[in-house]
Amino acid sequence: MMERRELFSFLSSSVKEFGKETTKEELIVRPPYFAEIAAFDTECQNCKGECASLCQEQIIIIGEDKTPHLDFSKRGCTYCDACAIACPSDVLLVENKHLIEVDVVINKNKCLSWQGVMCFSCKDPCLEDAIDFKAMFMPQINQKCTNCGFCIARCPVEAIDIKKVSL
Image 1 (spheres, rainbow, N blue to C red):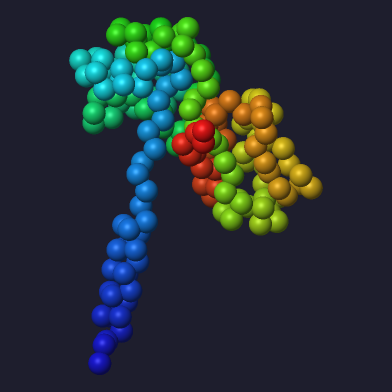
Image 2 (image 1 turned 90 degrees about the vertical axis):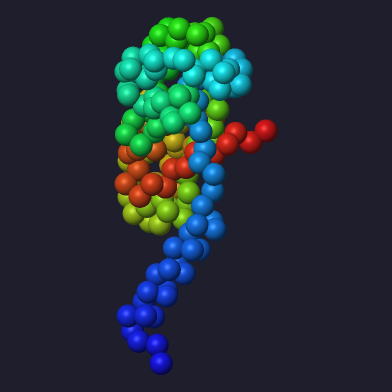
């Protein structure tokens, strides 16, 4: 006969194993000033990470592979050009400026507003007015979105996801 403690141990390990199976590959979001994605792997290896140190919002993180990626967990990108100006190897150039290559989506199952709770946490930091609310409880991201990421950190239930750009 299985004891209670063993049962909970078994259930806990099953949940952990289930989570491992469903863990998806981490999405690497690059600063919005590159022309060739391959240049990160070849040119950033000998760099001192000037792009990260000069980022006004401090969202550029230098990964273990010595390449820069964006972390929207606290703030978003203002497209200020500082990282491109600082890049000594020309991987990032101001003239290559484009939108951050992700799709920003609201997960309706997690979103408080979609569950009937009045919440405007994502709309408030949006400088582009890119989030519309239909009937006060259904936020949707519109075409004005610049993928800056400011809404992501502000969501109290992590209901805003970034995904690979759909082609």
